[in-house]
Length: 87
Image (cartoon, rainbow, N blue to C red; front, side):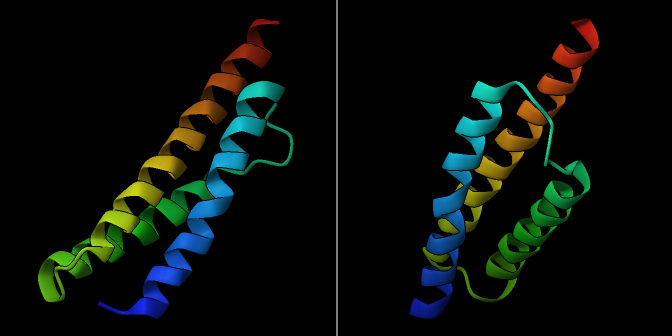
């Protein structure tokens, strides 16, 4: 297990709850890029695959947690797009 990898994932992961809450409350897509979120999701999936194939340790759960948060933010983005079209 790499402590530095854990710190990186914790730091990145700390930002996602704020982004999710802001997106949910604002009901706006302003400043959001689904392409960026998809690229980040691909990065986390790649990290999970790497852990499964080469270094299966507890850090994989941080990748999974971050992936779930980004996927939630992406789902809220599409919800907000739908809300904007209906109003």
